[in-house]
Length: 207
Image (tube, rainbow, N blue to C red; front, side):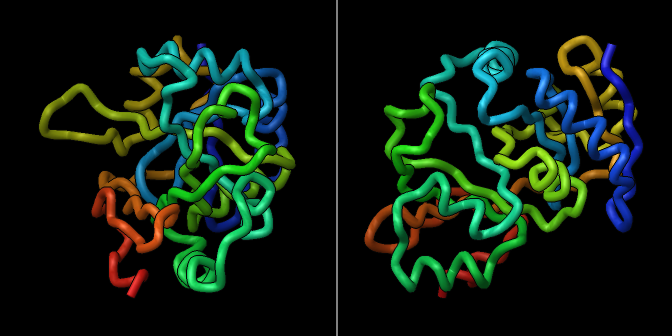
């Protein structure tokens, strides 16, 4: 049974944030709000938790394209190669915001991701997500939670999410209704920015 934890985005309660972080540190899985859709996440340093997410998604862990949820730009630099000024300017302009940026990974990537050349980085414009990461002290590895319904791509109601995921995760955070449009994915690992998926974030950000 997953814990159902109510946290308000406008004024997240530090005690509730700490409760979520304790779950993550013990290798737990959480479903939490972002500035786009609800995400399924775990501590980047917990192999056991990473394996659990990969099992739920039905994929091999080393082949998974998970995003790293970071607190700010300085957090990002722990896991990516040095970036040029043009790339930095795009990140500075876009984050925090509804974007996933694909960047070249560095040698600090967790062991299971060592073979990956690139990594997806997010800094969501959501205080709950960023406070969890800040309190945890390292990124959350994250993936969107899809809905099996062909019409409803993402579930937006936390109570319905709890109903569906109750036996699969350790906590569902109720941060209010989520969005049903995912983040815009932009690949910044090549010579020119490339739009991989147009989502909530405005693609003009790279111009």
